[in-house]
Length: 149
Image 1 (tube, rainbow, N blue to C red):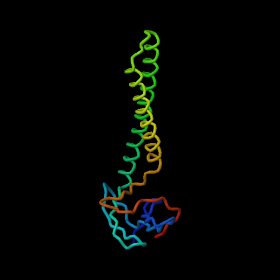
Image 2: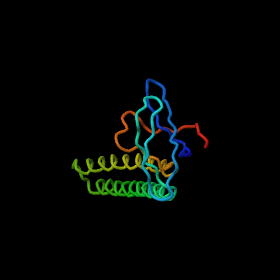
Image 3: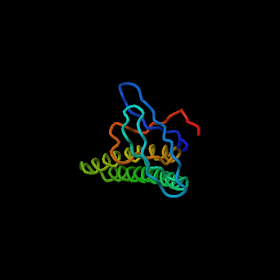
Image 4: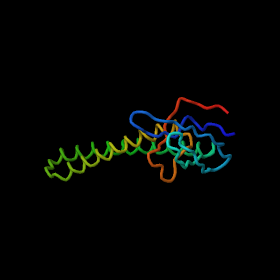
């Protein structure tokens, strides 16, 4: 008999509600393992990939590095923008190109911030479970329900 992996379940959306299918599999000792879970709502087979504890820790570390790089990119972008604005006002530049480049860097920093938010969340909560193949309308949802062995 397997054990529930993390706090996630296969969810099948229908109108406003979800039917949860807990993932009851044994986590591999090393690397990863593919498994198939049957959706309790529609009976469709959903392919999942389970990562070992060590691999899950590496995934979390990778997300932490991504979050750190995103913050570094935002800081560099802010410094470059401030320097560009100071140079424009100092020289009296009236071209539209510097303004366009600053606006482009603001968009890039916004995208970095959104990626930072996602990476920070995944660094704290990634449990090493992924849907693979073509999940259709299925998705992973956090579930407060834990099925015991």
